[in-house]
Image (cartoon, rainbow, N blue to C red):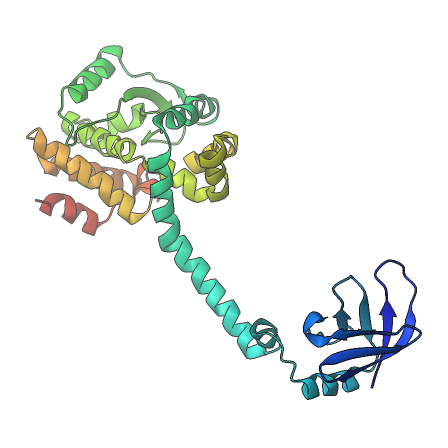
Length: 330
């Protein structure tokens, strides 16, 4: 016999009762009397400092007073907690579950999220890229960039030369090369809308049209492969999902300034853009040494007296392995 308090589920009035089980039927006796097959009752989970409850289908419930007697009753009736409840009561299982959760989150971030980002980016119409890229340059012009001071004829010649090159893949995206003076030094980057921003500083530093074609080819690879969209999706996964489902790009737009000012692509994505540039050089008979020269020269420029690193290299990690890949690719 288990002491308990009975509540009818409609009022707060408490009734003192006892609970017994006879032939599979729970019998409540005392200020309230009712019988119910135990198969229709629901027993709450075990908690260290909370009273257990036995709930009826109509909303009424018992709040157990005599915990030990109730445990004995459950054992006699063959009641067994669910697997989840049993696992929750074990520190070992709880710690193991935490470890599994951390592993799943880490693997999801490293492998599943990039795959999902690729799929979502492929599913988004090009108009979304254009909408996202439209206001980005305006923001950068206000905070990072300034009007270009490059000679107009020089800028036109760079554009004309690159436009004369053959893209390595069909369905090459539309693009526009824009020049800006940078407040953070030599740099180049591509916006989702197809605008390739080239700073005056990187043009003067390279002082080599073939090498500059390598920079533009690399950035066109980012545009063609929609790398920035994938980066944006990864950095705002939930907002990107909402974009696909509801067509609302505002949440992704809000995340662009942060991503653009700290634009770091993964090794795989950088390899894709490098391979795109390599293929473009091969298709147009340009020497790959000039492509490798870009990173060599920028690395030399970044290792000056101030010990800084070129902004372009900060987002495009140059190293011996990468240069060797460019020179050794077939």
